[in-house]
Length: 376
Image (tube, rainbow, N blue to C red; front, side):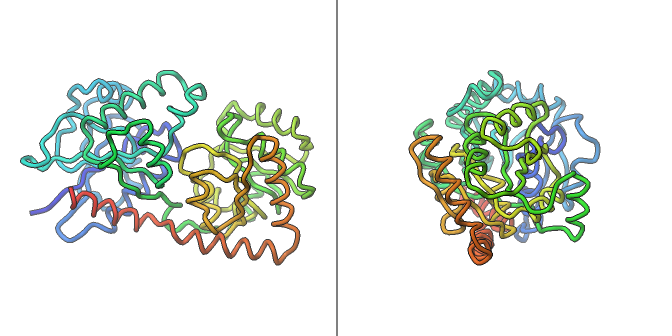
């Protein structure tokens, strides 16, 4: 008898969050590659969306499409009404899942969901009201009906328990990772040239929202005395002027700033390949995808100390403690200056980053997912 793990891949056919779409794809790939004997992986996806998007995950045993497109399906899931998804072993890389009453003991139905980011609870003003309402409603449904809820770090598990104490015995920690085979491409220089980027720069990621900490990050680079260009990636369309304003207020010359949007994994790796350091000023309770990318590629990391960063970066970079935004900017700036103060210091941090980066693997994450469902 074949055991089928059904993975929700809504983000592949109708992406709304690039990081979540990439995580969904990479986890599904790793689940297929690591499927135990007698097990297979099937996809669940909404109707419509991008044609051929699921081809990115080879080896799927099948694809079950729902009758509803993603937006309508999201509404149905929020209300707990019929979606046609059915039962079985269901694993979702997000809260997007049929969280309804089911019988795990007799029918062997399981539903496991994932929470990567607590912004809907910690910084709701940064998101559309409908998005916040959906996440809060789905977490309530998870409290009632999920067999397990996956979070990427122990610190996020602790914080989520403050929001939903009833999840205590059902929380599982399974970290994310950079894409399988993530490495600096051989055509890195050409890719950076096509992106209009210089060689040798300090890299940051995120947008102008307060929880991103970009204001402190830009001020840190400006005050560090490090005379290098600054590249900011993952800036959403329309937010470029706001990022430019933050840079100007921090004293960053206009000619030194290069703002880019969401990049493909290959272009992102090429950008990281040209960075002399990655500065991570955010202290949000969310999995720090770009920090993990930097660690994976051995880029020196200077990060704001936070529950998440302390756990993820650990001894792979410089962690800066502070009590406020101004103190954080000064601390990050001093740490950056020290990190790049000599070739030996930068090389040492690069080695530490690379060593720590090996702790994050989608293959290991997939093994833990298979083990979780076996335990259930």
